Length: 204
Image 1 (cartoon, one colour):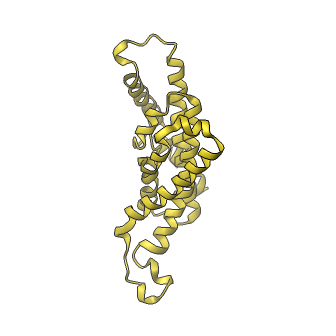
Image 2: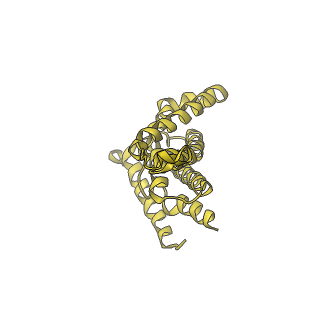
Image 3: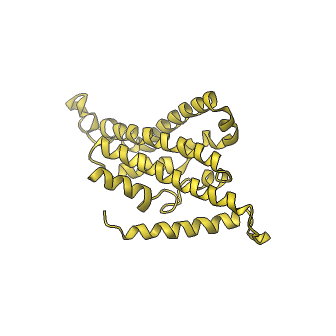
């Protein structure tokens, strides 16, 4: 039951886009078409699903105080937590490189449409945010950290696909000239964030 609670909270209540506004650069840039949004959203899901548990293992068995005691009792006082940022970013960058190679080989059209934003997933705030939230919330098991990473990715996916679908329909709307482009996109994002705030009333 705890895993389901973490999953639902990560998607709706603690959504990376609508609750914390993390990963906004690629969210705004790639949400022009549904096809590109789905491709990037799936890439973000995969990276979060792999990177958050990988960072959990790194945190638990290498970085935090006393984590190296499994090597020898002499390392029980070693604390490498000051390296968390660097190690998390290196882990995420490695996984993003793997995703980039897979997309380039098996979906070259999607690779071209995503452009620079695919390798930039490595510096996407929502990815690093997922790893840091995992560290801050001190999930008890690898399963909870994995479910949190998956839920965060699904939440980001839903946000970008929903916005891209609306933006495609807006092409047929008569929008005042000053609001076209990013102007109406920011307004839409704000309204969607307000809608997602209604989930905060759910106690999980």
